[in-house]
Length: 276
Image (tube, rainbow, N blue to C red; front, side):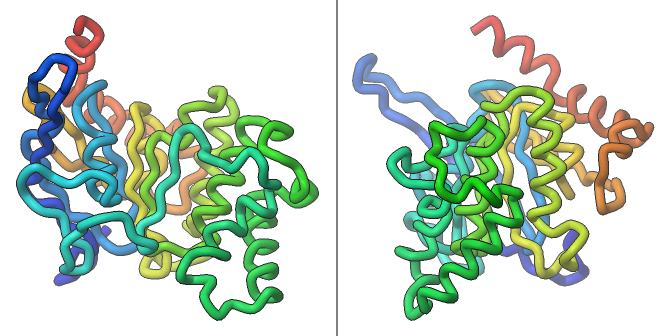
């Protein structure tokens, strides 16, 4: 994905995370050693067995948690807390239930730094653009409880893209929808990301946590495999499938080979995770 000589936009260097559990008065090492280089405009997924620290690592990149040791930098500056240059999309949609689709999509833009000095017309034009982009036209006045799971996630994606963060951090954003909707939304996510409309250097940088290996292969430029016991980044696999990706790529031998390769790297640990 990265060009020759290109510097990573995000560096994760020997990051460790230890939690103190007050109930047991013990410590738990969620991440022992994580190292990643994430490049501008790439779609990088993080996979691994349950409990291997995927979401913890993503939260540290977001600035929601601080590493116990090691460091995370973005464009050379330490990540010390949340920032508007890193947007987060969660599994549970995190929509405001008392706000309409329009109001949810407008929220980050209206109250974030991108909205400062933005005219009402410009704001409305941006919200309209992203509602249309995620195919929610006609549902602007609906509330989250009136939407299907797939529509709620479309709304969450529109809100994330609308306020224009540099990096999109996604924690299993499609896990809550049914299997058929999930496949459709994978293709929609790549469309919204701009795999056809935008050159690679103009796309958003995406860091995407998922348990679904086929999803990671379909979406990503690279897949980082996290191992547990101890929790660390084990390997990064380059997904050398051409873009744009369509449903047809799922039937290609190379797609299956990559899926099998990644599953082979985590299979034994995934099995052990079911016994804990």
